[in-house]
Length: 154
Image 1 (cartoon, rainbow, N blue to C red):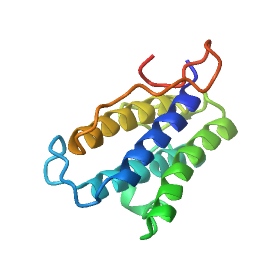
Image 2: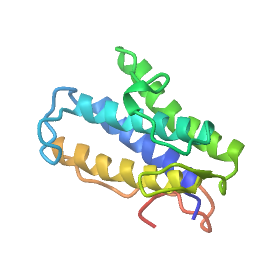
Image 3: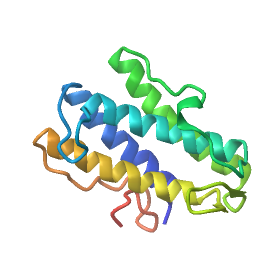
Image 4: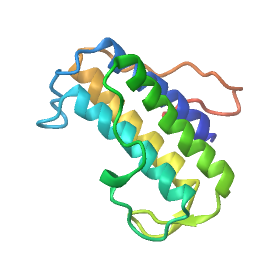
């Protein structure tokens, strides 16, 4: 499975939901969070994983200290920030090599592990956002050849 493509597609679908929603919308499946907070969590998580891979870390990185960890205030800039975070992670894994060992909360794993992990994280939070916004969660159409999945659902 092509988790890099799936990650980018899930990230784009999540961004589309955020763009269409009210930032103050409560997220019932993430108590005490709003859509804006969920958005920030997802976007910062991408950069957190990217920095772990880029630095080939073997120890914990406090997510509050990552570079570029806060989105711009304007919606278009914030959505671009979200999309850029996933791109940073894909690029970091490509540059370090998918088999390079890095820190994870489960112990050392290959850098490529972060692509799958973050893909699942975004899919889960895309479902959270869709439920909060009263939308149906649809499987994304494939944008890559049939042999490569473009969704974490495959």
